[in-house]
Length: 203
Image (cartoon, rainbow, N blue to C red):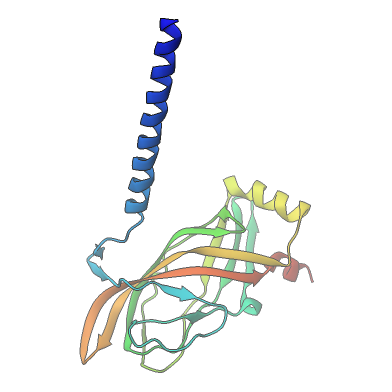
């Protein structure tokens, strides 16, 4: 009887401890996802920008606003034994400030919930206030080999006319405001649907 009582006591306390640990882990994850004050020496712009499929209204409080991605321009680039890649041109629209983009990095990018690799965009370019800017070269999204089978199986089993692209992009640059160039990194969240480039390539 004592053994049963002791086991019940241990189980109750173990469950309580497990709940506490789970809460601490969840809090730790939530805290880890918060943006730091600086990344690679650039001050982080606290307001996160959202990429839409069409241009949005100008927001003067942000150094960059919604970008435009034309689904018709997304193209299959290469199919090889190491993976599949496609190119996605991006247009920055309704820019309220002038400045220069030094480079762009990509984090936690997925296509149809499958993680993909996106190289840093290292082509520097300048932009002027009120003008649209097409990136000098398209962004290349690559399905690595260890994800290729999963992606190919989904495509063969249940090919969808639209692909969902999600992730976070960090735009590093210098943005002019009140006559002063501010060194900033702007976080940009992406959540869009694009035409399936594989279907378009077959036509």
